[in-house]
Image 1 (spheres, one colour):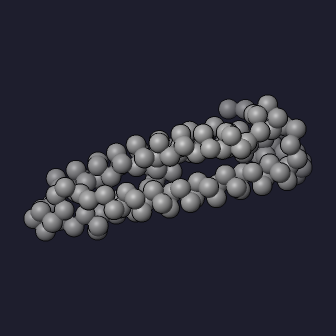
Image 2 (cartoon, one colour):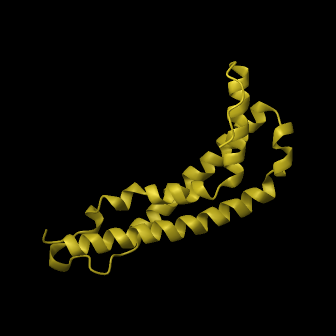
Length: 134
């Protein structure tokens, strides 16, 4: 209770950092992968193995970006760290990064398109038919 205001402010600030830096990272990832990627209308023509490889590569790139962003955000000092004995590094949310994951994945349209195609192909191969579009 003693640190409720400080901790609440810290949570809001860390969430804001994850939101902003996640959005910027997502734009950067999209820009880099857009140069290397196929045109979206060609995804249907690519083999399932290649599609799976591209999805895996995309997810690995995201994992590396998440790792470095979490380190970067963790290193940003909290203005009131140490005030009334408050310890910013003990904040649980600073390691979570759930906001980062949600924001970045939300803007990864190409990845989500590939995953949808890949999922449909796997369902067909396993005899489940097409997945209804949402």
